[in-house]
Image 1 (cartoon, helix red, strand yellow):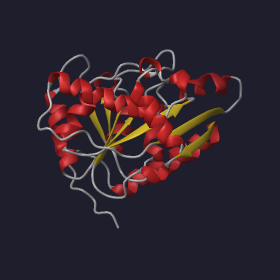
Image 2 (cartoon, one colour; image 1 turned 180 degrees about the horizontal axis):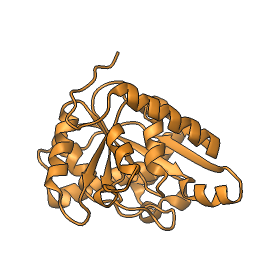
Image 3 (cartoon, rainbow, N blue to C red; image 1 turned 90 degrees about the horizontal axis):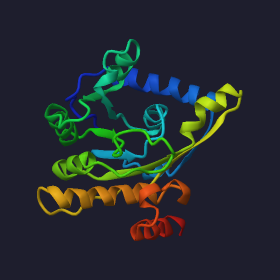
Image 4 (cartoon, rainbow, N blue to C red; image 1 turned 120 degrees about the vertical axis):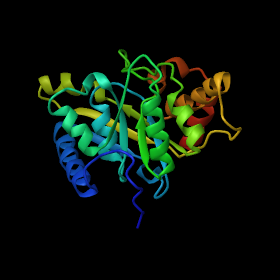
Length: 234
């Protein structure tokens, strides 16, 4: 049985979390044709960071419902005063982040949560892709993984951006959630500048390798993506 890390972030008891997760799972299966690949790649214990691409508002609940262990996610503070959404996010676990600046409080809270054994979900792109292709990643996920010395679990989401339009036509969108093997960043001390950028590229390549070639965006022609994708197919 996995030990529960001490709560660094204020949130509801685990029983409430998993009850809400079950409800979201039923809703998702009702509204979409939902496929999960690689569930066995989630570590059974210890802290880690889930890093995924970002296509739509549906991505956060998709990540939330598919992780078998309790996690918290980043959310832009522009949603912090949205009735209903705010309460739901803070019930399951959220770290509000100020957009457009280095939010030191959010960074400190995140590192403390990971070092306490917690799990986090982050979309390194920082914003939704308007064309369903992977955008250049930001360094936040690499910084946290480097400072907290935790593994990363890459995740690729496809089809979530079509959920709304499909429902308008009374169709269920095909949504696929693919989990890749966990990996760690090179351990070279406290990475900064160019090194953090290199680590971010490494993270994004792991995500891109799980996506179809037409969705890999700026990482489509990266040699490492081809190598990782070949490894997944064997």
